[in-house]
Amino acid sequence: MTSRIARSHGRPTRAETKVGRRSLTKTWTPLPFATRTVLDHAVRELARFEDATSTPNAPLARLLPWAESMASARLEGRPARAEQVAMAERGRTLQREAKWVVAGMGATRAALQVAGALNADAISEVHAELVAGAKPFRFGRQPLPLAGSGPAALHEALTRIPPLPSDEVGAALDDLVAFGQRDDVHPLARVAIAHARLQTVQPFAAGNGMVARALVHGQMRAAGILRASLAPMSAALAADPRGYAVALLAYHEGDVLPIVERFAHAALEAVGRSRRLREDLATIHERWREASTGLRRHATAWQVLPLALGSPTLDAAGIAQQVGASRMAVYNALGVLEERGVLEPLTPGSRRNRAWRAPAVLVALDRFQLRDSTF
Image (cartoon, rainbow, N blue to C red; front, side, top):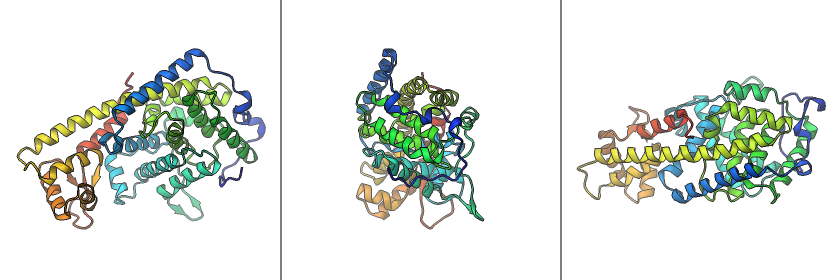
């Protein structure tokens, strides 16, 4: 397979690599019945959740990519608050962690676009989207590292997994692609194992974790696990970084069960966290409605409220296009909602390219990252 994948870091000797050299297609053995049962339960719960939140433009559906990318960046050692991510999305900050989160959202979109064609070039496209979005600063000839250290347990685990020798990467990815096309392996297990393979092969000098986690969503879409929704798997994995690290190390040692079971539990965790975020949004919306008491029944502000619930940042032009109102009417509505404490200026004092943020939604996104496990 011809690939644009390239690496700049040193490679280990063949004696230092373990499961990365083994063929998934040749060494695969069926999963135990108990594991398949847990996987089936996880897939059913994902389907139930999607059926209840399947509207693409619903606030929760629009916020989950934010929550997912914030968690994935945190696993990569790039934690950022939602307020900073909102600024980065509008090009109002140079904070690297926040730009990394925005880049992760772009990588996830790219992964969903190549969902049905997982190959080395598709993987490269997702990585290219990540790097382009992060726009790493360069000094002299060497770029600053794209990845941080991540949670201690995960960072320690990944340092114990040497990347494959360069001349073996292509074959390992070919094997991954072939394995992904098998129909005798549980679909969620295929997603988990493909993720672990990419994490342990480490085809790029940096960004492997973010790319591997972004591709999870494309693979879940291609496998039919989810049709249109996005499950915040990174947030679930970040709830137990040690368990995630142990599972990746076990995979490297040749045991696939821990990463498969970790993904099954992560899917259930993702559903639980998403439901709690949906409850938070319902509470916020009710408070906003109370704050908007007295507005005319057909006031444009009522049309802005549901958009603000799923869009942490807003501008008049974008809203006018979505609600079919004049820009002046939208400006007036945004001003009213600002007066009532629903919205705040993204950059106070600025009169050019004005944008607003929904502080309650940003707080909910930060809380989403810090919650304890839901089960």
